[in-house]
Length: 253
Image (cartoon, rainbow, N blue to C red; front, top):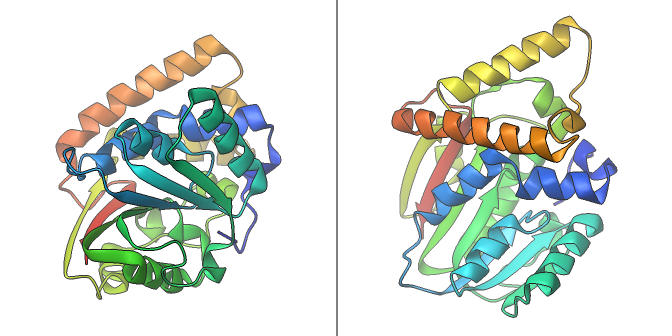
């Protein structure tokens, strides 16, 4: 997944990358959200594009699925491979590759493809979405999340190297080839208010986002995870609104 702007996270230490991608309450919540759309009785093949250090692949492996993760950052792929070996996972594979250079069906056909927090990094996002359509079996599902609404732009978007945020109509148009599309948002109201408050505080102090602020010791990390999980559990009651921080799209071929 080559980005127009380098993701600042990947200049951090391996430990911080892993904690951010695998031990963050919001990313864990999104993983639970999209996997709730998957039939637990169906194993199938799963492809995670922009897999980072492997959070979604590890969840797929727990469910007995064959899973492939692809990311352009070798540092993240190395972290994922090391964790897979540590956990003794046999049916997973991680590949370092640029998403924009992939050929349709390069890895075969899949029952599920994940694009979680990926297309906001890519100018030619439609090319990647088209790849997912061509790489899904008939009836297969694309499970996609992306930041909602350009008006919600914060310093976290700057830190992440986002090139855009999407509106729901824009995303629906991008998924027009799919037979059936379900779209909703998550992260309203508390998660959104937290983002706004943090953004205002940091900008008023002329500071940039510092990920170590939430991960400088184990106790702080645990408190951050617990509080974040409570906030997202409450916000889940309002997932049918269009005002959340993040769009979730389930598209069936």
